[in-house]
Length: 126
Image 1 (cartoon, rainbow, N blue to C red):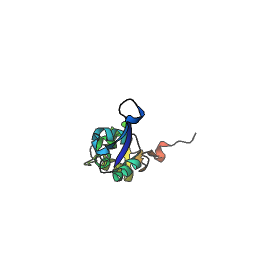
Image 2: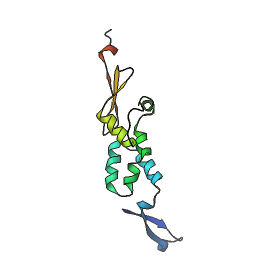
Image 3: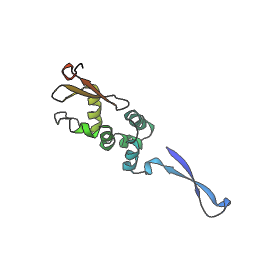
Image 4: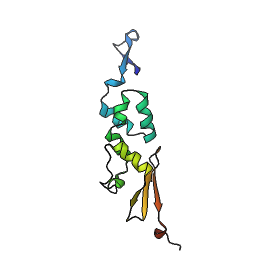
């Protein structure tokens, strides 16, 4: 996938020229940093757009950014996933019991929003 960028060469109007840049010339870390600012749904879509985006969009750095920092401590080491993407998808499908089993945490697959479910024992009528 190429994108054209106009660049000034020389000082006059007749010195203008166009140069093309290939996205594969960008470092994977740079692409991953950009993708981590999007949503999980966008990261999956970007992996299909270009071969330059696929390795970056599947990197652990991107998918770790979709896991909230306060939840990383709650995720037990018992959940064995080879990648952060698989861990994220696992937490979307299988709620994680937290707070002594009185609450569960799950992620909405497309947006990454947290879903908490409270047990009846945690509710009180006032």
